[in-house]
Length: 389
Image (cartoon, rainbow, N blue to C red; front, side, top):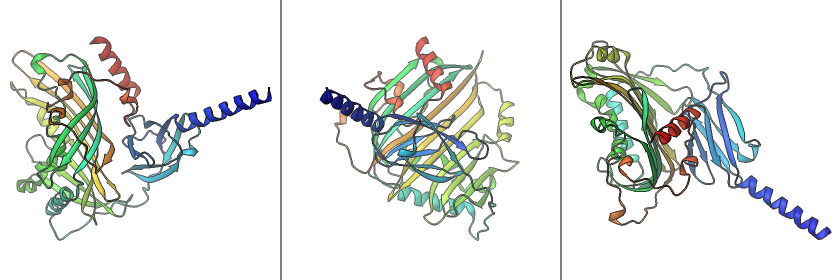
């Protein structure tokens, strides 16, 4: 009897160890002062080298496989490293602090700020790690005339080779799923990311072209500021001048002033551009009322690579007999990075523009371990589109 009790006790003990080492943990990141959730914070699991990202509710969910350090960072907050053994609950609240006691002083330079930006972009392109393999999770939502009508996500491997404006990308799709129907006459608008050139664009910082052109000096104001949260960083603000014409964005570029490489870029359409766009209702015009872009790059030891991107766009497309309203929301997250090449056959390479052109391949619930936890609202949208398919 004693032997049986001992055996049962040992089984219970080892079961508890296995559970604690492979249990699913959730972190809720909040601002230490306002208690509001923090979106787009990077959570790095040191043991598995996995990148995770907090959603708009501030939540990150992942599986723990033994003790590890967990690094938490956000460009607006002080970095924090914790030990996984301190996470005692299923959902753990972690407060991040922002050092707002220092002023973001304006930096006066002899060199024109636009020339500085050109140098930083050129150097960033040169420093990006290649060859490299990025395991990427993508997620896209499509809204047509106020109703979410299409959704897709996928897990892909991007093999990047080449250097300095001659980058080449091979894509292998591991898993993907798509739900919903898109009307034939607007299918070209609802395509989201173009996978054929998305990485080349991010690695060449193509989205900064409008403010790198020489004529941009007559259209935009360039201002460099200090960055209180990190003395090694500068922040460049690029805003359209009041008399500028066209749909113009406001840009913010965060960069390492010593290494001269870009850490983060964000942009949004200027209020002036939105007001001008609303007045144009000619046939065939696309009046943009929302445009949000953000991309983050990571420095990990000697490696420098794309970590995350988010794009949101909303516009009205004026046609002969009707107005079509379209909104697209896209996310990309590099969950794992490696400098090792993977082997593949030419026939394995995915060459279509978008994942919704590929038949669904679901082998695991990869979306739950993707590093980008869906919010309650997003999960509801996904389920509704799936049911209506």
